[in-house]
Amino acid sequence: MTKQKAVVLDVVRSAKCHYTAEEVYELAKLILPGISRATVYNNLHALEREEMIRRIRGEDSSDRYDSSFLPHGHLYCTECHSIKDFNPRTFPDELIQLTGGTFDSYELRVRYVCPDCRGGGNEAISDPV
Amino acid sequence: MTKQKAVVLDVVRSAKCHYTAEEVYELAKLILPGISRATVYNNLHALEREEMIRRIRGEDSSDRYDSSFLPHGHLYCTECHSIKDFNPRTFPDELIQLTGGTFDSYELRVRYVCPDCRGGGNEAISDPV
DNA sequence: AATAGATTTAGAATCATTCTAAATTTACGG
DNA sequence: CCGTAAATTTAGAATGATTCTAAATCTATT
Image (cartoon, each protein chain N blue to C red):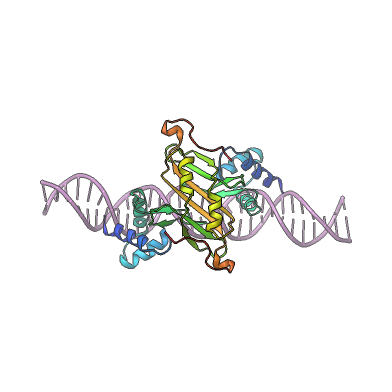
């Protein structure tokens, strides 16, 4: 665990949202001004392999990183492009049946219009993971 | 509906698996040798906007296209990299609750080891969509 | 302090995708 | 039919994200 890798991990872990590699790079530079983009990519990949962080595919363009390992999905608002975490309850049980017993991980992206954009209140969205 | 667009749609529709844009381009060229990559991309986007086909994000690298509109997920085998469709049952109901009533579409990618690679039989995988 | 191995760096290279501008096709009104 | 406008196609350049490369630096062990 070099200092660069620690900073990359820390940036992803302390994020309140899901950063792209470029965003991680910008934030890491505030702490280690000399850090290079390649190092950020290397360490994001290494941390993903070591299961310290998880990569999620962006709706368009670049991938994003998530430090939560609780299985959960992402709600993408088609209007404001916000991304919220959510936590399906019945679903993982069904996945266990469907896959015949085991699965490594899943990535779930749901496109919807979020309560704010719909103008309603905070409906049944579960707590962030 | 130009002949190029019809060919692109046909390639995606007749696919038994999920092709990348490049693969669609290669196959379209067999029918219309002069077709250009830009036309393939244009038409894939147009068809997606018109809800004739759906884009799914590749596990790595390029996006892939799917002509099924029944909501379903994709099972990615981490060993042989096969992609199978599957059809969750309880899950869409839960999504309706979680999103507060409506969602446009979802994309679900599950990483697992497929029955063939596990050496077992054809366990509980549901029929392709 | 010497060595080997891993990591970092800067920048070049690659790959998928988008953009651009010119050429072609299509649809419609005269 | 014929002309015109709008849409589509084309080839290739441009872009953006990511990966690669090779040299420099760091780390750990002696």
